[in-house]
Image (cartoon, rainbow, N blue to C red; front, side, top):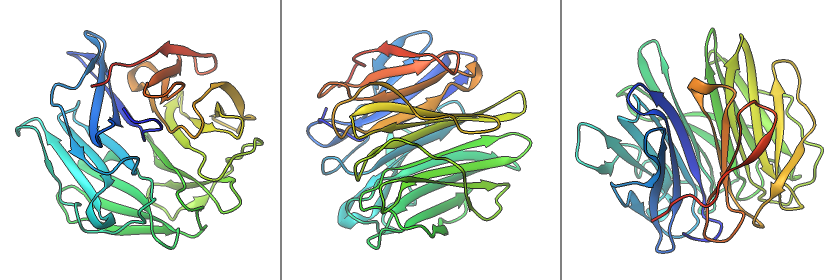
Length: 306
């Protein structure tokens, strides 16, 4: 795989395989691939092979639902158009999705994506940066056409990483993070599809322009919990946690490859388990994580890649 390959991940649980995790990455030839974990088989490379091919180190995001029967991968395609690749269990392999070619991003744009069910309809949200460095939201509800949603008012630094998560419970809550022009990170929050507002997330650490941010969120005992992971100026993987009432100070966890990307996912049926993926050595993906929401350790290094 490429050094500093963009990473993307999501997870689910099902009766047949238990916890399943997908981690997307780009190999040295520009091919987008997956490495997979399930509780029965452990880690293995995706038998479906190449998802798509593109220039190296472009934005990448993934999401899915229906216990993996539906998956989506997003990347920056030809002429800086956002591209969508779909996997449906009922069809044979990966194929182009309806979003492909409809919206133009900055060539340096990163991406983020979430999917969720609302009133029996599966909804997808994709986030990207335009050439004016504004962060945009793209929306699809069920089989309706894609449309542009919110444009976030705080200008992003060129090439900002973008992270998003959601919690579906008594309310539907959405959280978005990116880096502003002053290199600090901003949080936006929306509850039940209300207008986005600025949240209280703050990290006391210093970050270089283009520093990476990723996040995971879950509900426990009726309270929202967040884990926001960043790569700071000291090239450390860091975590900032929110446990229902307020944000804690950011803590450094481990050394990271300079300028590495990262991807995080909550293990939904085993809360408060969270996993985060990054490069701590060139050409390898390492898994860090927590089983209790507080104590972090190296879980596996390296993950198998094609």
